[in-house]
Image 1 (cartoon, helix red, strand yellow):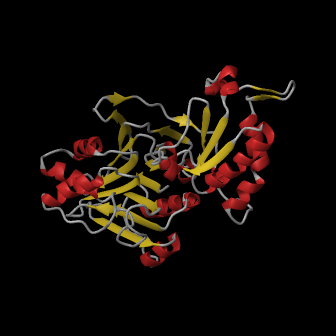
Image 2 (tube, rainbow, N blue to C red):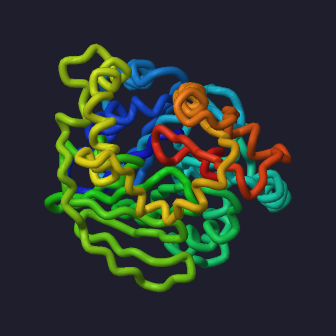
Image 3 (cartoon, rainbow, N blue to C red):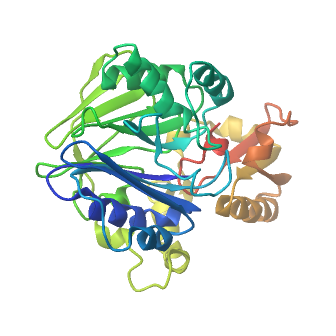
Length: 363
């Protein structure tokens, strides 16, 4: 589950991006990077394996200057946690810069095609094929935006991508495919933001719009324009989120894990609101659109998760068996997806995700 942040505005981008990446540390990561375009469109790309402090040390207190940029924290999937495999990734001429969350399922074929065209790769990642694809389309006289759209339509899998170009240094272009990690656009005063999640935006704005699967956005410091991947315009009105930076921060707690442990009673109550009548102890689950008869037919439950949600699946199995007396089991999402599991119409499969974006669980 990678973290992404992008900025286009009048302020220096680097401090905003680094601050945003720090706000996304809860997502977990093994490398981090930043790219900023200066006033002439010249890129400065810095990336390091390990934690953000490693990246800060590599910058040696001298942040790249420029008002447009992107940042990324990465969990390694294709290729180990190395400096070369860290994001952002660039094309052959360092003119296209990309950060990416997800898995490009057909990257081997794409990479082979690009290598046959003369493109040279410097990492082991699936993500690096994206800037090279964009470069390939630009060489065919596509505009930056058109090249990103054409590349998005070639990619298979759930992916979220943000790209910047030295040819158009004030613009960010992003797209989301399937149930990839979220992309949220934040609206400021003469500045716009892009991020994987709200905590990176809240110090700057509470006016946001969410990118849906199959949509792309182009933005600069004044406006954001939304489209489908077929080029059809999409109208979005920014919404105000009743969620502030203090709620997203660790506050008085030493770390987020401890904060979440102490917030469990409130989180449970919030989850039950509108779903449980405490007057007559009735459960109402209208949003699931499942009837009492459907529930009565369930004779087995399978809980799926990864990471911390896998631990939650183990607890859920115990509760289901002890309270409902239903045979239950738990499994890792990444393994369940590629097996041929024995389930039937009377099996309830419950997918758990801490972020709501876990690629293997959603797949």
